[in-house]
Image (tube, rainbow, N blue to C red; front, side, top):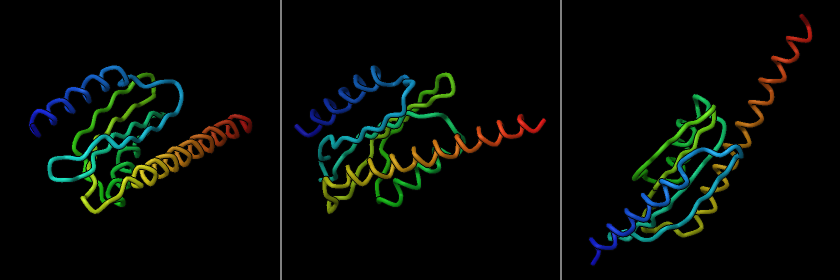
Length: 132
């Protein structure tokens, strides 16, 4: 029964991932609690869509580490300078469902930092062009 349930969850994840995998033109964050694993860990699905940048994955990894989440699976697609990351992560048995909100807020904060950095880079480039 547990093996069958894991197979069903795996197939559902594949089905959802196939549809949602391409990056959109808007920044998006979703975090959902999926289910409990056979050993009692809470399983989450997180999706992050934003402008691609070199420090994005290390920042996401740091967020997961800080929340004591273990990455079970990760998929990434890029298109036209945009990226979508879909992560399946597990929380320890003693963690609560509130962790969904903590993860969502941390990813939102990451997106906001990313957007402000991008704006300041663009501003500097425009200012330099104005001087020439």
